[in-house]
Image 1 (spheres, rainbow, N blue to C red):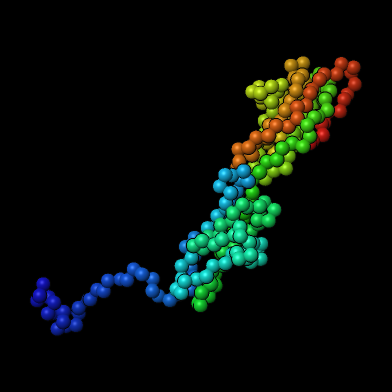
Image 2 (image 1 turned 45 degrees about the vertical axis):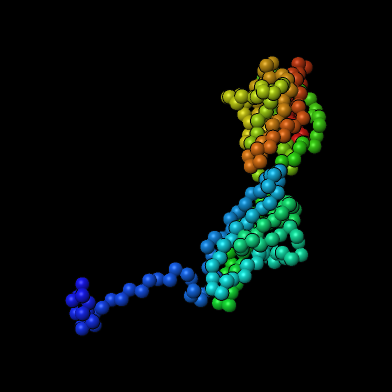
Length: 234
């Protein structure tokens, strides 16, 4: 109350609280609020635009520029590039020109800061080039492998095999195995029931695109000779 106020003035023990100014008026160098992250862009995306995020504060307000693989991105020379609020926007991205490591660079009169590197990759899956594959002939009881040979792609793939017609897929068991590393189909001790056409199905896990390879006919040999067990890839 009033008496306490008078005493604090008398003994010089008053504490006067001044409200803080929430505006950042202090002069200081640039500081990252958000640095760019790695981006995997599906080439078949309807968006047709990549955004590499970068947000910076500083006083005076920093200027922002970008580098791709250590070389400055010339926003003025390429209409596809624009910097909005510090972030880099790429219109109609090109997998050949735009792939690589990006860095955001902020500068004001107090100094310059450089962001971590952010990797821009493109996810795509092309079609198989080969339309037909040779018949594989194998003796009953032999082991064999059918090579998938996936087409050009970027992004993680998964593999499956169709037996004769969709949706009849090869079920993995103690005789049959589909490698998720190569896409190859391994069959141990081929039986009469294995005879038919085999088609490799490749799925890009980023774009969810699927492409089918050409069917490979598998037949049994009965002449007792060992045939070639491998099939060349596409």
